[in-house]
Length: 240
Image (cartoon, rainbow, N blue to C red; front, side):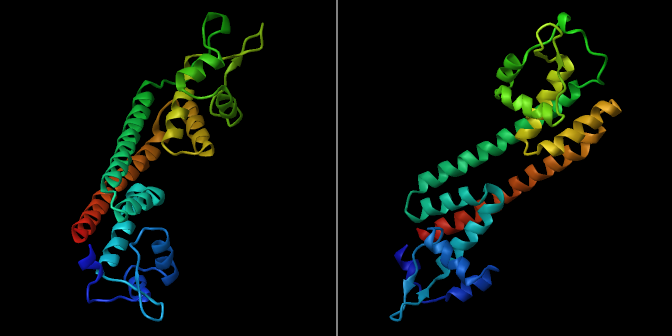
């Protein structure tokens, strides 16, 4: 690493900034955050960078689209302090999260295949589940289900004798869809009209665009992870 850092090719902060479409302040901030290795200083105190710093910056900027800014920052900090195994662990966790997101999308699609047009609800006495058991099944708090109800995502009936909320099969399906879409990054105000359209139309067409967009985002993240891995590998190679 010392040989690379002491390369005869010196770069000013402005050179590094212009080469990556950044401001010189952003470059200084990245160095202070540990994303770049420490810069050498001239006798007058000015920072000087090398091609290794340029590669570190390229690696970081390539990692961000696939892994997000916080994870990309943690990866670069780990590499720069010599904790490469820690960087690999962070990468593995990020890939595992992407796989989990893909499984979530698959679960949403499976849930949609099971969704049927809403029919006349059964009387509460003939079946249904209450808020506590349903929340436990979904792994959320009862308060979350009440929030979803206020947002129009679910519409449980009330037991005429006790006043408790009763969730029938169609309500459980709506709650499951809402839960999966929330995990997919959708906001309540985005989910409510989708579910309302599904109920009104008696079909799944309103969700097709959302699912295509979701697939597209996951594919973009996968491709970005590949690009980031290539740039990071080059940075690791240059540090050796």
